Length: 192
Image 1 (tube, rainbow, N blue to C red):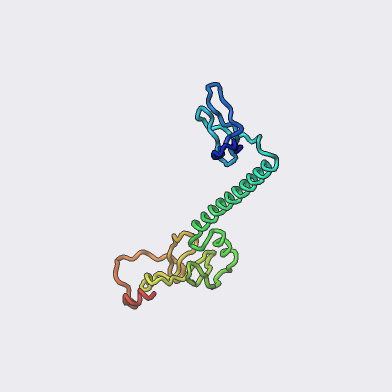
Image 2 (cartoon, rainbow, N blue to C red):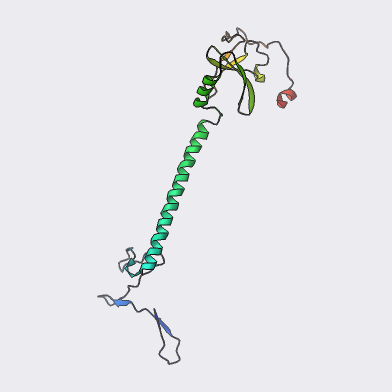
């Protein structure tokens, strides 16, 4: 753009040196806009910016910026992918036991060995009997159920079977009566 002043005392005017008249007598601005906006053609359609008017330094600078943006996009995409993988793992193992961990417990523990198992913020007594892992039942819901002592640990999702002190599955009760034993007050239950 060129500022022209005819020395007549008037305010100088801003003239565009790249204006051309088309066949209908309209002025068409052929100067390139490097601000990022795509100029419209006379028909109103968007056209690609003409990068030929950029000097080599500007072109190199823009290419470097594009490369940096591509790298950042790739980095962010990888993080999102990693986040999805971590989220899937945490969702599938939120109960703090995996099939791999269960397999390792089987390999590590010897028969009739007692140990302490920590899962879901609780300590439990664990043993291996007949090649099967068992946890000592300490749930207050079974406090008065004398035929339940061990819980089989063969699944990570909580679907387990209950066993007596001889690792035998108890027979179902014939009637639903209150078992003998201590009765816990509501305050004691809440404290647990």
